[in-house]
Length: 367
Ligand code: NAP
Ligand code: ZN
Image 1 (cartoon, rainbow, N blue to C red):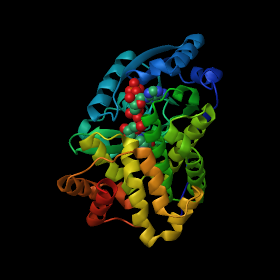
Image 2 (spheres, rainbow, N blue to C red):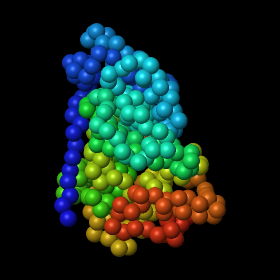
Image 3 (tube, helix red, strand yellow):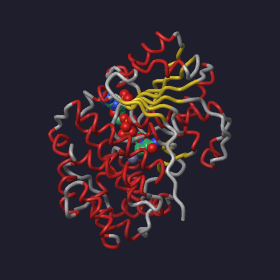
Image 4 (cartoon, protein in one colour):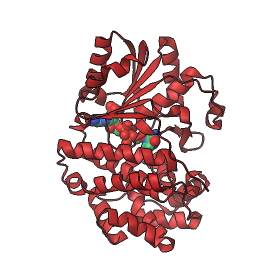
């Protein structure tokens, strides 16, 4: 079976890379739709930098700053209605995974008339506006993925729309925007990136290129475990985490995620547990489950982090996660049924059945 690696997004990285790449913005169009969350982009300097570039280029913009964490389907239709009324011809997303994902879906719905009940059918034309992404968390890698993950109230879960047309054209990586990212968000997002790279190595779609990228991402994140725990990260470590997160995005853009993400979505949907934390809570016990039938692969992952047992890894995760949320048996049964129906649970060569999922939830949450 042949496998492929594809990455059309141009990545620019380094201190002040937004302002030093102002000609890139000029090539994109005349009027930008800027998509952000409510607060952080206005405080961390990212919005100021983008506005300075657009002004000096003589470009116009319309600001859509209503993106909530875990954006819903309804919210991206709202964003698209705004974008259409503003006649924008390119998109700049600034923020964590939520604004970046929302921007992709808003873009799609601005360019194409897709009724809500057809959104997941994937019958899209090629019409899309060019996108620039400025991540301000180091976790999702959405700046280099073709996915937009939306909260779907009808299905009571989060579900991804994916298409090659959703790959951003440009990603601009500057860790200076993460200088004041709170400790908890820094940890959660780092665990999300770690989960992407580990799940990528356990995916049916893994190949030598994604493996190489994933191992480099895991290695860089593991070197920051101690600083993550203390909450004292240098600018250099912030860059390391940002690069590692973009590498993780390059991995899942090709491999997709597996059971950890499928299981984590219920923790977010029903218990409001942050996306990265949800994955961090489940990752250790998922590795223990895989180890039973694929020990050499799990060893490969552990050795990149300088570890020899899954227990060692779980101790590190415990240190970063603190006290774990508890689930009732009813919750576990419900979440396992939802995860068992998800597409991504089948991306790993070892597919956990419903009973396995129940056990992973129990071992992860109710220890
Ligand atoms: P997020 O929901 O984008 O942001 C979490 C919080 O961090 C928000 O309150 C945000 O504030 C704040 N924040 C962001 N940047 C900050 C900064 N530099 N300083 C201070 N605060 C900051 O969280 P995320 O973990 O980055 O993204 C999670 C979403 O991404 C989930 O919906 C998940 O499903 C999705 N995801 C997508 C992919 C993909 O491939 N597309 C992969 C993994 C996850 P504001 O709201 O004010 O901005
Ligand atoms: Zn994720």
